[in-house]
Length: 162
Figure (spheres, one colour):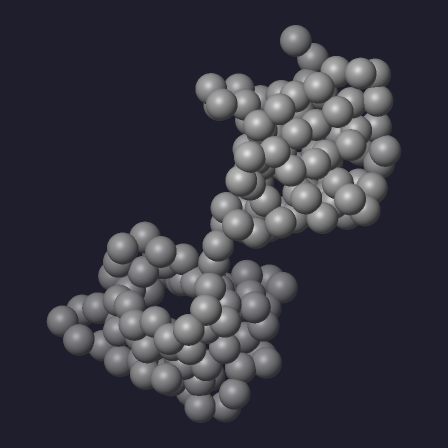
């Protein structure tokens, strides 16, 4: 079976149950209750989104969410936002090392979190676009959207353990 690509206006995407999506192709084919997943979740946030059925089979791929019709784009972005819920770090309140763990207390867009990072080399990724991705000991993820936009104190705390 050939891969189906969704681009521009060749499909209409709407919400199904919860964060699941329904797709109606321009040729009349329909796919219901599809899960949207990023093929490149770190570097390609809005590009190459796979749509999977309930058995995990790929039904279609969206090449670039930003080129979809407005209604479809909103639905896909909302579904991805809900699935990939990653709190955005606004301030670093505490950052210190204890028993080989990097301990952090941060304020995020979702509230205050305290967590431990096992390995600063494996669990902290500094990306070319200024983002910093962190994974805690419980495998939860956090993001600093623009490291250079953090306040001076937060940067100093973070850099002292990097």
